[in-house]
Image (cartoon, rainbow, N blue to C red; front, side):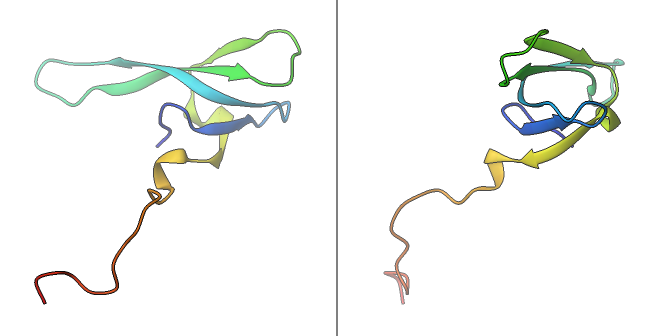
Length: 80
């Protein structure tokens, strides 16, 4: 599943960009389902932004949500 700020590539053209908006459709009592992804391209070519109706048109390059948070992690906890 793609998230906001994910770095993606449009499979058809190879253009790289990041997801800056996701719209979701919902049915009462059910989880919202993403149905429209807006990608902001970083190559300077037109169009600068494009909407995609299918997640399969995009390839995930990098997910910033999976990166570890910077900071000190002690070898053992203080409660040991």
